[in-house]
Length: 126
Image 1 (cartoon, helix red, strand yellow):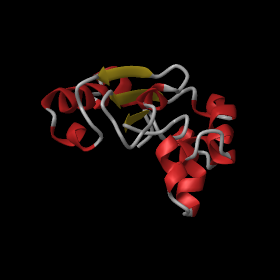
Image 2 (cartoon, helix red, strand yellow):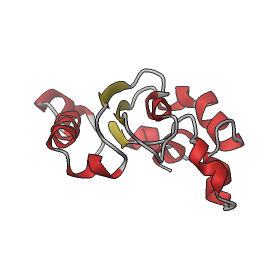
Image 3 (tube, helix red, strand yellow):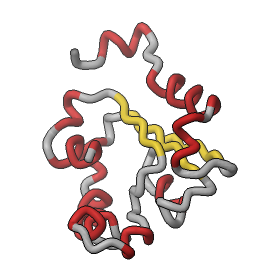
Image 4 (cartoon, rainbow, N blue to C red):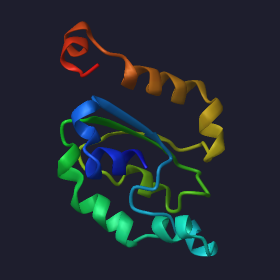
């Protein structure tokens, strides 16, 4: 949803950074097990997944950090969470999908990714 906003709805012009946690940038095979519209959109190779890959250039100015749970069973394969061009990617091999929410290392990476220098503060939209 965040990438759709940035790339398809013009949100990139209002956004300086995006941090994603265990996000299926290339889809997730786990979505093949559910008959819902959301699951269909999250399947590898779906129209939505393809569209986001094709229009990535629309959000090139947004600094993106992707955090991957290496033992994720929701985002399968876990490498899907790293499948985004020009993102800074951090892998946490031992963590599962929900464990990321409680891990101090993940928290530190999110905090680091969102920290703005004084120079950057003046450049970002309000």
